[in-house]
Amino acid sequence: MNDLRIRLADWHRDYKQIHRIRESVFVAEQAVAPEQEWDSEDETAIHFLAEESGFAIGTARLLPDGYVGRLSVLKDWRGLKVGDALMQAVIAEASQRGIGELKLTAQLYATAFYQRFGFEVVSEEFLEAGLPHVDMVRRLA
Image (cartoon, rainbow, N blue to C red; front, top):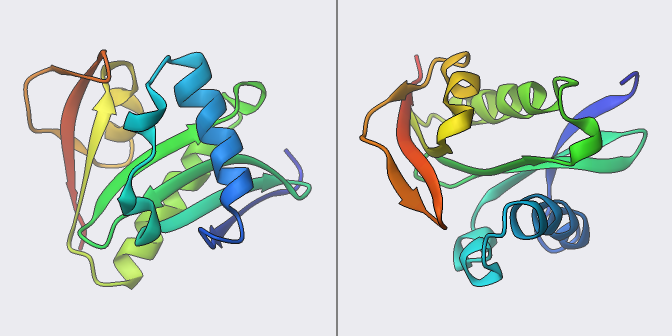
């Protein structure tokens, strides 16, 4: 991971890379129905791409209301802090835009990951797309 770069992505220009990552992680690996993965909020979201030597390996999105979602990293790059770099970029961008609170719906297994970034669980466990989730919140200074 010598050349990891996180950048703001353009939904239209970078659609193929974002689509490839999210299809691989959510649809193929986790069996999320495509109609649940793709929504109209992608058009207005701020998208992030993690790239290693110019190859897109991870993505995330931030909605104007502070909702973080679709954080995904391709299997071969997991455990290499790509998700950490994406979250740091999302938090920094939200702070720069004056968003006071970040919200997300986390898969249950990922709650410890988000807690490392200051998110707190604020709901009971529930099923979304057939997977156990919780709602989480982080207030920004």
